[in-house]
Amino acid sequence: MSFTVAIDGPAASGKGTLSKAVAAHFGFAHLDTGLLYRAVGREVLDGAEPVEAARELRKETLERDDLRTAEVAEAASKVAAIAQVREALVDFQRAFARRSGGAVLDGRDIGTVICPEAEVKLFVTASDEVRAERRFLELEAKGFQTTRAEVLADLRERDARDSARATAPLKPAEDAVKLDTTEMSIDQAVTRAVAVIEERLGGRE
Ligand code: DC
Image (cartoon, rainbow, N blue to C red; front, side):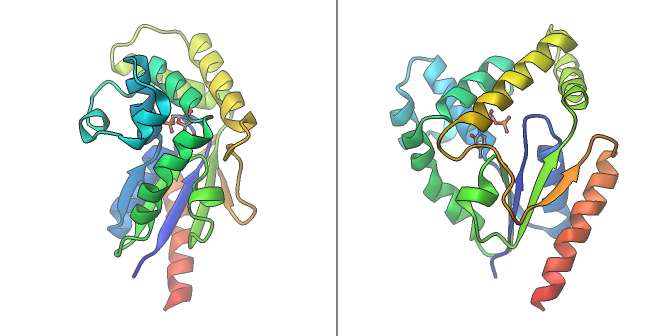
């Protein structure tokens, strides 16, 4: 059986952590679709042409350990606004979503464009300040020199670009369940998401 959980939301909303935990809980496969755009962004920073980089995305690039930097995030957000880049990545994401055994995909347009038929759609948010604080602590732990103000400004700029683009902008699907994690611990958010998924799984039996 295939069962798709689409988890969308802005940068540093907690959707990545939540997706991993939910996938582990149900034994579903997980795809962080932001990594696809980050890999294309990385190749463009290294001189590649964006559409070509997306069409010929290489496994080695996806496995690079320098995709989580602020520089790559910005490059990813820029290439993600190009319609042909997005188009080149659609089939891979849809095939992943429909694999048997269940799949969790997190990104910006999973519930709206990639998997409009997903069995469960969640839209994860948190206040700008809380998201910036979480990302700041993550970057600091990795040894990056930055400030809270800089991280907040970067997040806002990226969200504005991701939400304003013409193709597959960041927005909740009409039937998405909204999860505001501003005042939630990771465990609370996971418990809530698991409950939503269990309800849908139960309805299919
Ligand atoms: O989730 P992330 O921060 O790793 O994503 C990096 C960028 O990639 C994000 O700013 C916009 C783009 N992206 C997208 O346009 N669509 C997706 N499904 C996932 C990411």
